[in-house]
Length: 377
Image (cartoon, rainbow, N blue to C red; front, side, top):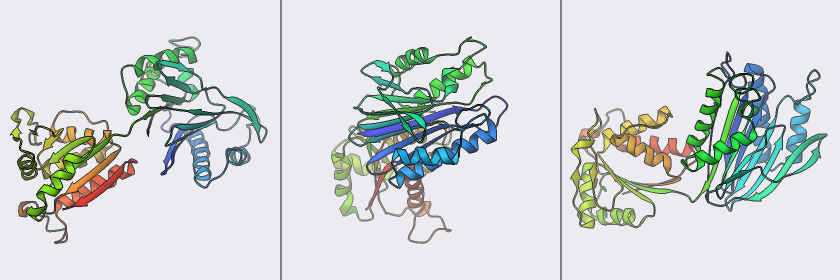
């Protein structure tokens, strides 16, 4: 199974830095998510939360136990002598590839567990670690389950203003139940939750506010064929690899599109109604999910990935960027035939502009935690 995780935050009104911090770390076996809320707000809170989350992730990566992590953080960040509360809160969530989950909560609101259309706290047990009381739970998550971690800025959204006592855990749970019927993407779910908090705060958050959305689902795969093979004898081999692949199939480039259409016995039809500004129109081939123009569309797609903002629009580059961002496993089939018109004199003779763009796209996707493979033809 694949674990999709994303978060959204609001800084307290008047502060440039958010006092909440989220770290998401992956390895071959599991994903680890840490949410920390530093005492106060602004720079000090940000430093405390960053220190807490960084220590936690680093130690867990090194194989340390939760007891060691909590004890180290407790010694590093002592209790505030004035308020008698921790300098930083801590929630740690680890989910293995088989759905086995481990949740530790220290002074943060209870997590919201969405499963089978209902929302409830995770059943946990209390225990002491280094004189600190933590909640600990081991449970199983299946495809379709979601988990939400929040800082107290979510629970108390609107307190003293729109809502006298704040939003409250039960009301947040009701909203989470509602939005999970409408949306499946973790990034959108987290943003929607924070947007409502911002409305309750009337655009002036009274506290740092963070929501982490975790979605467990089957992995999504995509195979992208770009450019014709260097040797035409490899045309059939590349197309066979594309058509035999699971998940979405995407083709970039006019020549590549014609090769695919020829090999599978289908027609390629350009849809001129999809021409948007400087991005060429897409085409359609039966059996292929998306067919775009080549280097111009790829370059615009790269720009959108670099920006790191939500991708909107229905042009070829936006459609391609969304396909890539939605996939967890991306198989890139890159033909090495050279189009002289696309050569960049600043690149080595062995590297085409197309290859350079594809290398940059692959790098960004890897940085986003996606599993990327590249095969050259």
